Length: 155
Image (cartoon, rainbow, N blue to C red):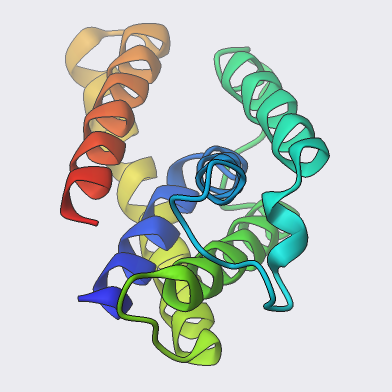
């Protein structure tokens, strides 16, 4: 179950680079995810949580801009995979039934890679159905919120 959650949090990184890390950081800050005493314990401090939240909000805004870069370009894909590894490791180490941080990182990175391409295809499909990108982007964001709620409920 724990490693499955690591994969799923990584998958969320495929859609938005900073949303899942902000979620993980606030979860650690509020004590819902116990990563204190691990190499990722710094995520639970208020400053990283606040910075990641600002980055996530900026990304949500920037994603709606017509000049936003494609999420599959090299630096975007690498960033999503790196953040997927970070969040996957944090979830696997901080869960009630902890697992290996390395296994969580690997599954989080894999989830981010798969999520990047899957969510892009879904977004492009939605944009084709709507006839423009903005409604597709907003629908994608709404689906991410639902996915996060289900992920929290599953945890």
